[in-house]
Image 1 (tube, rainbow, N blue to C red):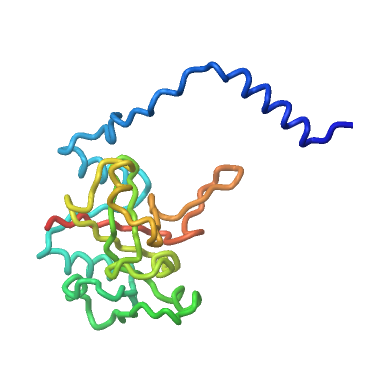
Image 2: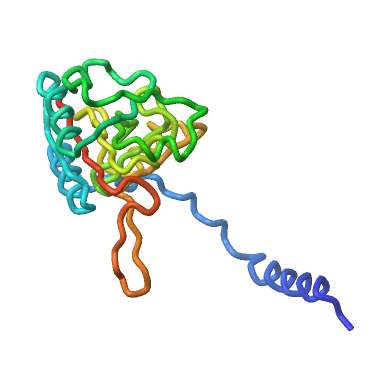
Length: 213
């Protein structure tokens, strides 16, 4: 009785014999387009796709940013906001004394993070064609879990510097050794009846500020 190994070797031998005289495969071409979005459409497409994923999109310049963030936190009734280690101090300079700043603590438990209402971060990159934000745990973003546990995430994207058209354009700008988190809209899932439930795997509400430097 032949073994499975014998059968496999016979099949592989037949395949090798069948392709022995076949020409070498052509070299893979790399001259394909890396994006289908013109440069002058990238920012608008990002805003459209973010909104399509049910993120709330705002636009601001540096001068208006502190009051915008303060207003968004107040509108949520936030009493505590998580702050990454090197978030620019000016971003939160307009929040009132009624909101406690909670600094990113590696020892904080999931229960402690869940008690925080909001988190404000920067991002590593934003991708227009997919409406995706990429975080890499940089100093203005903090550890991954501080953006996954609180129910409200405000993410600031510097435009145009941090925006690319497509995933192929994004990959060379990202460090694969860092813990990358790819966010396309607020966390959501659907059951077999297609009933959408938000906030299961991350923030229920995602607000994105497109910051013009």
